[in-house]
Length: 417
Image 1 (tube, rainbow, N blue to C red):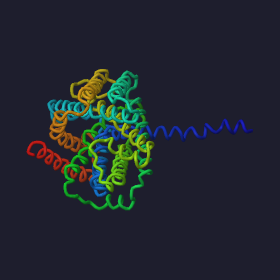
Image 2: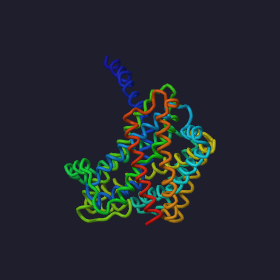
Image 3: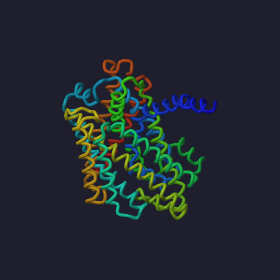
Image 4: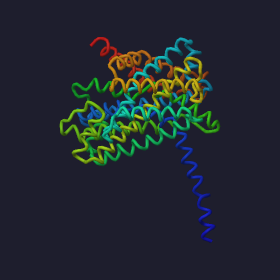
């Protein structure tokens, strides 16, 4: 009797496990987007904001993630409603030149920032093990390149990103437990918008990085990859929301930990590892190692995701298709990884010229991508019943206005300051 009961148990729990796996796979595209957006630069910016201004800028997380949800869901719905890629649709509507300009522009931005992701990996592991950071840059770029040879690169990418998101949540939420930020101050910072004197540059940098139109656009490609693997899977676009919420949680947790540990002690942050170094004398080696493991997760996930994004869009722009199964697309992804590793090893930091190039290209490409996504998602001929609702049209237009204000501010800073 006991044997028959034990044998029956798997058949009861199996559907539940299967549903959990199916749900994780459904939200996989959103998690990949969150992982590639939340890189070492976001950790640095969020830490700087918390260290300098305490909890007062937490409301920016809510604003940035709200608009990110609007455009990520919008992009996911485009991927569901169409059988062709976003860039092919853009090419049909506005010409081949627009398609190539966006693909090449995104490739240049991703290649420019890739070195920063590689450096983040090297610093995180190097600090934790007291070894040379360059060794780890090589090791983890080689590991990432090996993934390109896997039969199903998307499935491998999805599993790795889900694992890294889990690592980041564990690392930063445990750090949150150690540092015990003020919950009342956090709540106040989230609902009462204030802009302390001198905080505008960090504010612009944070919103521009968290409200990532390029990351949102990639959602359409990832959703289509998921559709190719499982054509019968039901998707609505709302599956992107959990990933964007996790992105917001990570940013808010890092900013709050920085506010609790650094702001009260007047300790400034200049690089991502400063937070880990500040934690060690207060909470011990374990807390410092936890934060560094989160930094590693953010850096490795951003390195893989950033390269996949740049390679996919350039491949699509050049007519190789927008699928991660394409051999030519994988070669382009590998090229971005190699370029990032070479710059990271050669310079040890992201050269100013690359930062200026990435910012200049972003200023002119990102607003066009935002407008293109918005107009495509409003087009009933393309979208059918999945076109934007009145609600999404209104907040999408508000997001575009916000984006153009950011672009104008960046132009002023980059070219006239």
